[in-house]
Image (tube, rainbow, N blue to C red; front, side, top):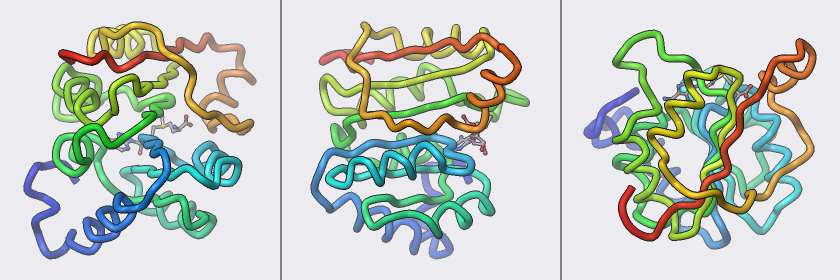
Length: 188
Ligand SMILES: C[S@@+](CC[C@H](N)C(=O)[O-])C[C@H]1O[C@@H](n2cnc3c(N)ncnc32)[C@H](O)[C@@H]1O
């Protein structure tokens, strides 16, 4: 699911066509990475009907299950976030990026929070756009600070639902490290 040429292939053309059609729409755009069951993005999609809500997730079953509940202003696709941000999103097209409790990488090929990813998110966000992040893994918080050396920003539109991992953190009393960062006008 990761590669700059992947979505040029016929097998992925339908996904790309759906994404491109959705991006043609109007209204502010939020992107959630790794939406899992989709509680947060589906809640926001219902609360903010004038916004567009794009979610990407690696697990096909999650995408299919959550898509059944998505209103027209919400598109959920099986795309690796690294591919989405590096080749599929137009520059300065996104208002808010949500990354909630990313998976700790199981090897170098799975790393999401890199300088390159930070630069691609910078390119896709509008100037002043927000990167919203949460994790209970201190190393991932440190990695996000390194990939996004940005100033503090204004919170994006939020719903009332907690993600599955955030519920676990509350239940088990785990610390949650958060970032709310504003995309700078220049640099990454
Ligand atoms: C630890 S789970 C957290 C899910 C949810 N955001 C939460 O807070 O409960 C991380 C999710 O991100 C997805 N994921 C991991 N790497 C991804 C990537 N590169 N692009 C898109 N989704 C990814 C995983 O499949 C998984 O569902």
